[in-house]
Image (cartoon, rainbow, N blue to C red; front, side, top):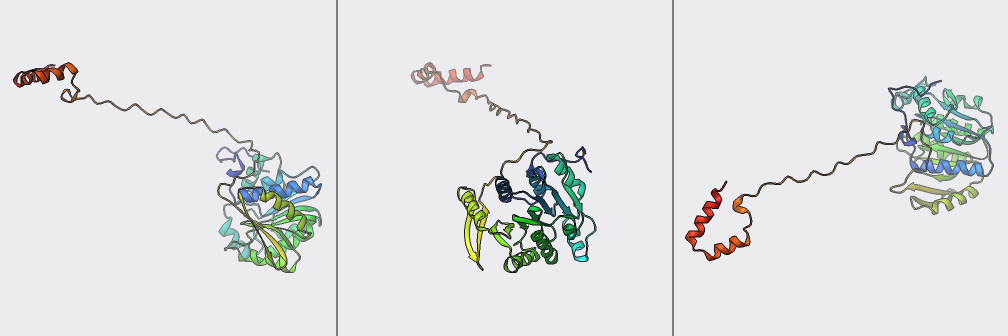
Length: 308
């Protein structure tokens, strides 16, 4: 097990410091779904397929209650099960290591989740059926793998459980899109809501949770919201508006208050001596210049100019 003692690596002080793609809107939605389950007394384990550097896993881990398990499955740069998956892993995650994930996770938690360094195909044998209340799928982008991960989630979720599918509409992940909408149209998955990156769904009745979600979202000024109907499904679409902030999250054990910035006062502008010829004349000198004959006035001025 890795420890967070390395001194040559920058350790995260806040969740935003952890590398990864987990925007504020999805942090809000994860938190809302998990807290709703907890308030309703729904119990079950947590599962994440594909962890990258641990950003979403860190948030999920905060919601694991006593008696619940949290399992994370990722290749972590290890051997992929087939050629296509190996090519994808080499292209997208060549810098990923299990040690980096563990360092980040242990910055926020006292103990690691159960970590499976393996392809997600091992999950049906490693996680008991009908044991999970929340499953986050963010592993392979290949159709066959995502299709199988969705099938595993169907078998693992308790009634009322939530599955989250990442990259369901990104231009570089058409395989995820095909597998996701195939599950909606042919495999009984019911969308609860859509964010820019993720589809949140259930194999139960989505209407009660949708109504509560809509009530929460309509009360916020930082989330754009629209509702559409398609193929018999109500699609609640959400998007973050400018300036949206992630919900509060505890800082890590490595957080340090930023040093106060001392602002030096602006230096006083340098003064330039005014030549004697440009200095304002006193009132007495002005009167004298007006009353004396010009020849005397010129003589006086020359004397004053030559005075040391």
